[in-house]
Image (cartoon, rainbow, N blue to C red; front, side):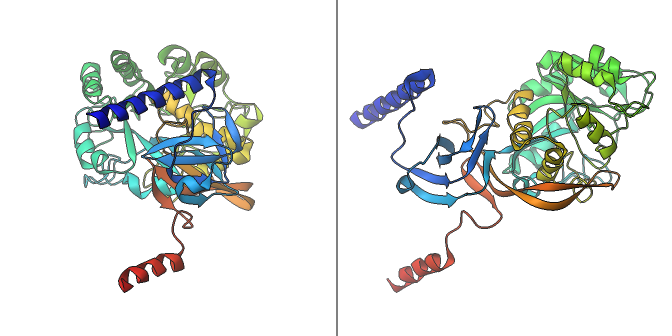
Length: 430
């Protein structure tokens, strides 16, 4: 009992010190030891307005310190990240990972990819699957993929009950707001929004029912707005009348939905939508990012709010590549490194209302992406296989999720081979 009370007292004291530090009483004391120290990097943490050389200490799956010149002698492992950027684990806001069903030709099947195969190697610790599943097959998705993945997979349910499966997304009878909201409330830890896409009719029914369900469940809506019937469904009406502030318009640089006027200018409705609070997302994909829209958008001062891939089998080996490649495109259009990190971390965390993610706050989840920024002569493809040159390329060197190294491109967190095998020989000698 004495031992328990002593631990309780120490815990309460530590909590008090952290609270005092947060209220302006100074930094919390450093722990006596930490499992891992990322040493010598440049930390970018948009939530905490940090962009400076700092070290990051990690223990028990948590960030325990983000400060200058942390002592190395307290660390069980020191990882040299000199010359690299240390950012929160990246959040890909638009992916398709409902794999393993065996259904050919759809995103509820063979067109999806398994999350762990593509997440960590691009710095992502969280993927948001948008619309691959609906309320009728979400629990199969959860059992088949989500619960078996190291990657944190969050979901926006399709407004269509069968998701992007063989039944398609064109039947209003399969768009049932009450059932959608009920499934979200049953799994609030995983389902964070509603997606509508590919409805081919001239009516607004898919958007209206998505918004109805979202109001019932208090979640955002993402719209992949089909290019059909632009006269009956103009994007200005979508932004100013149908969607709510905080809802998301993906594929913003596609050029398929009158984002660009005949004069080559950005549709004024997009500026009005942003003023109203609509979130504009890249959603690169296999057919929804073109230089002919992205370049004039930047020239007119219309960058994205969030960067995402629209990862699936039709995009990963084409123009899109991965999250860091899409970030590199935005970097070469004129955004700063701080901007592209914010668009891939803290901003999407806010959009999906998961603010425990996307930051490096002390005491928070130890999801970390260590990024290398190279300068040189690089080429970047859009979805029309048109190349635009750039001089900056981001690559994920190290990805840590919940304090564990899941991707290590150049063995930075590994042990030197001679030292490691010498220890092994010593063990054998004994």
